[in-house]
Amino acid sequence: MPLIIITGLPTSGKTTRAKQLHAYLSSRIASASKSPSTPAYRLHLISDATLSIPRSVYDLSPAQLPAHVRSANAAEKDARAALYAAVKRALSPRDIVLLDGLNYIKGWRYQLFCEAKNARTPSCVLQVGCPVDRARAVNESRLERRERRRRKARERENGDGEGAARPEGKEEGRDNDDDRDDDDDEEPYEPSNWENLAFRYEEPNPMARWDSPLFTLVWEDDEAQTRAVFDKIWDAIAGEGRKPVKPNQ
Ligand code: ADP
Ligand code: MG
Image (tube, rainbow, N blue to C red; front, side, top):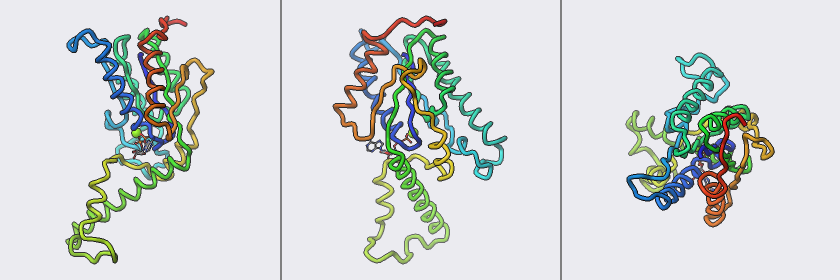
């Protein structure tokens, strides 16, 4: 496709699913290719993280913005332009582009759909479904982890980190181990930014051309269900279900 637009609330599991889908597609491409040197498709994963776009660009409160940024809206527009250019550069009938991001604005998804059409390649949307409270809780635990790390850094700077009194029952070095075991290294959203993004989120509509075909995975979906959905995506973009795309349709 092939453009696969991933969408969902902030901290709802989009990147987790994007990585799973990337691994799945890599192996499908390998088995669909005649030889490793001539793969049937090239695969690209594009996200805020791959383009080094910080969470703060989505923040509408001016106080949260870095000094060099023009205005809250302009920062997000610049980020969208960078994402759009990256997608456009990669997109072709032989390049599968996975766009991992909020993609929460209907008009933005429409623009991406048109871009895929121009490149004569299909597009689809994968919605990552997650209850609002659970997604918020993920962000809250990332905020707590950031706070813990900042506190430790301050303690180290003040030289009282290692020898500082520990709460009863805490073994020495336990906090560090907690952070090391945690392979989730993503930045949190500021709470007001998170609430705002969740409020502004525009659900995909399977009846809209630009949101279809629409595939959905929810938090609880296990490996078998995830694989079944990925199989359907593959079919729509690269298998029998793939329809020819006319740019002016
Ligand atoms: P997003 O990209 O939407 O911000 P992430 O994929 O980074 O979200 O996921 C946020 C956190 O939730 C991660 O720590 C991840 O391990 C966890 N997570 C995501 N999806 C699931 C799931 N389906 N089941 C259990 N944990 C999940
Ligand atoms: Mg993510």
